[in-house]
Image: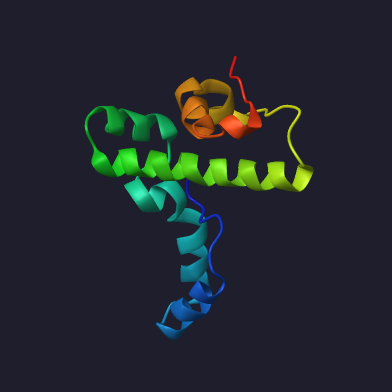
Length: 116
């Protein structure tokens, strides 16, 4: 996610409330300041990849986290579905970023995925 949190432990919200955050502040934090923005200060994957190529270790780690989280979901859904007939990437990154698709599919050999 560019700016949203994705999965979180629901008790994080209670922790934030107990530490003085208002509902509006929590909403802003989880919708506008999390995800890749929270990890890197950037929300555009192209800018994050550019930072990585320039040697930014935080950007490199954020991209690894991004790929890992997607890979984890692919594995979970493949288990629920008892395998996959196809894996289709969509949206900006899915359609335009072959390097990220490759990174996501790393270590998914058990699914017999072949990128084209």
